[in-house]
Length: 277
Image (cartoon, rainbow, N blue to C red):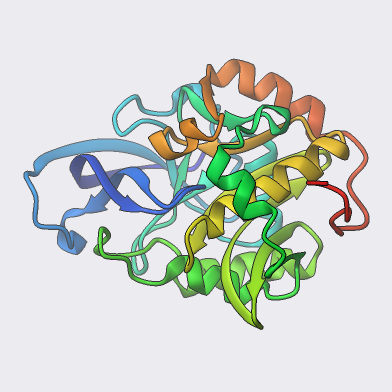
């Protein structure tokens, strides 16, 4: 498991700080000296396993209840480490210049592709022929757009180390982007990971109304056709719930995860032309 490592952290309670697989990520931990957000703070000491390069992950059953899902620190962002994490129901989330933190929250927010909810306004937007939706033609641009500053956020967890790590996974065929293009400009999109028939959402962005929703609608409908039965959304947000996502117990998530990651992978990432016709 590696050494035990003390963190002095500041618990920031229910702040809309950083993107998850929507446009906000809830609950963040900051090492005290790096805290950027002026807010009511409660200092606390927690004991975490510190992972060396070859250390295995601890069982997710050891993840903290508060902050929900914080499991370990350390290790690296190599493709092998990140793939092992995702196969185990764990993901990295940390600020630039701080130790890598690994998370596995309980409950887990998921979107079953077949349960995606189409509102009337989104249905109308999907029928608009002025946009084009593509897979994997501008992966790094999507990540940087997701990392761009937003009015409601004072920082981003999508920093250069994360962009480099996921770009390597994109080149290896595991990380994918969905891009919404309009008049030659990138106006919305999302990125995430795929292992077997499991998709893990990471972050989304919009420049136009419904830009990220269009990307998620296309992804959900295409994944449903491919037999991908679950999109990991990590943590609850009302935005995702409005689109059909829901929380499930971590044990249920892990059971389904193990089934899906061992399925045959998708080999051709192209959208069908008749998804919304």
